[in-house]
Length: 306
Picture 1 (cartoon, rainbow, N blue to C red):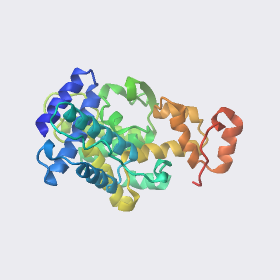
Picture 2 (picture 1 turned 90 degrees about the vertical axis):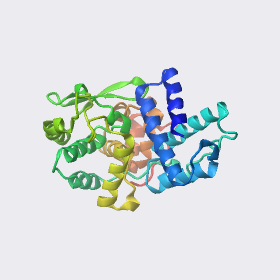
Picture 3 (picture 1 turned 30 degrees about the horizontal axis):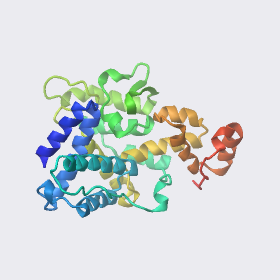
Picture 4 (picture 1 turned 30 degrees about the vertical axis):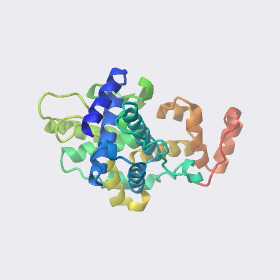
């Protein structure tokens, strides 16, 4: 199965897909294949729709964000479609792949409270370079509202601690310059002082280095955040990277930030994507938005209790 994955990724590269996209597909499809092998699936010809359903159910039980699950589902569909087009499988098992049909699934997830965020950050120890790296990553996931791939693809050259700003390379090759909060700047300074301890040869330039001196993997970061959340807030809370991004957006909106500023902060191409957070704004604040910006009221979803 790994040989087919390598060929699939080569075709993506030939199509001009970005290195970040190819790496993400590699890590997430590779993780799926590893899990499938643990369940007895050894060849792509043996792959069944029920196997993929069980895998997504497994990830759902781990508390992964729906955005992450959709990305994984998309990757599996692309890979299985590629296998089918080349005659390597007779039936595409991913055609009816779902990640849930509950009506409430499309509603915004309840954000972490500021106290819960503080508890998560405080729980990260500071014993060694890996701990300091993890604390700095957690600070940026929340304080800069970063997507997972945006964080692990940061380079040293993208960070200016003197000015306390961070250049982020977002979706669609769009860049945005974000302020770095004092707490995040302090965590980054602590990590950078010992970052060289993680190097294993020439410096690759990534801001966050793995234990082997390379770029962090999405799977490793997802697992770390999930374990930290379970330890601090309990397994039922289902903490994941996107929940931190989601939480800072809601906290800013509740604090009175303009929704268009939040759109720019998060790197949303469409304001409609950002407007979903209005569902989590208390009623009186929602009314203020409607009065000040009538165009947002048209088609905006009903607000929910915080």
